[in-house]
Image (cartoon, rainbow, N blue to C red; front, side, top):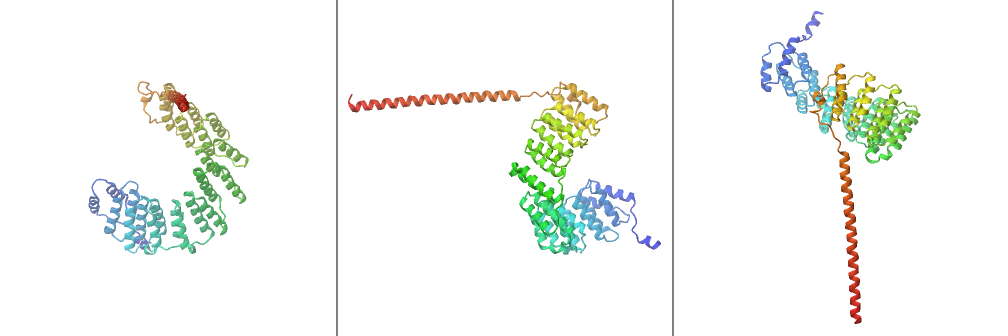
Length: 474
């Protein structure tokens, strides 16, 4: 046991780690100054100490300082860094989305003949695609042999997932076309098809997404609930843009297909449709979908009620919206804070502070907490509307509850706060006056024009008669 203990690398002390951390995090001075400060350290460096410094500083330190620290460590370490340490550093720079640092590290990895781990390639590919460098991500995949990383099922799945996550399904299909022999097994096929379906859905390409569903059935992979929900979202998003009237019938056809394959649509499936209906302000269809959910045995969740109440409030149906919220409460559903935050914000935006106060009272009954943002919204809104008494009441209530308010106390002072005076009616009256004057002008111009034309006709007739008389010699 003694010999085994002696071969293990010493654990870096917390003091050494803190000293290094303070130097790397110190933003004063150039990168050369950072290296000069690092040269002053005399204690032995180990690879575990280097990775610990990277992990502890990655959220705070600039990427360039982390990169210089790692490059300095390579030259001053007591023993050579392992491939694992290089891979760890590349993952850190990928997490910080620094392409230049990643490029330098990958170049050094290749020059020194080191091995790239599959996990590292997966993170690098995903980051490059997110940064819009699709060609670089595919290029690294094509040259994985230079990084001593195999082109196998794991790396093919990684590049396909990375490409499809940002809608590059066509490029992903190109990769699969050349490496189909590496994908084997039902589970692998299922993951690949899911990614392709997501990629085409991101592009709102219903035709290609439908092809993926058909191909899945052909190769013996049964589309699951995730696949159908992804396709349903693709279809609804496309119809939202080009054919809003086809939202409900097309979505219901997909749900019928789901049931024929033994897959029951969930509230999440219906919420996809409700969300798109709300964005087109189709209130009647939204209410009908909620009823059809219950009839089909699918219980609406709080998101369903939120989407419906939202479109009702936005279209001015405040009483009906309140009934929907009350219905949700009666059914015992406990929504998240987002439910109240968003709906109260909408009601304040459409100048319905009374409904917003009622909804806030319901929120407080649920004991959800997180009332600060609502107080910060309602107090200035009420005071700007002239209801300073209610604003002070809410302020005192929040103070008594220990809620920290971020709005200024000055909003409670009528001499400071400007009271909002609606000018909509006056504007409408001015527009009506302008319209009536414009109409009268048009009518007058028409009558004047008609009078001129009739006079001209009479003159022409007179001239004709005179000419006729002249010819006859009368």
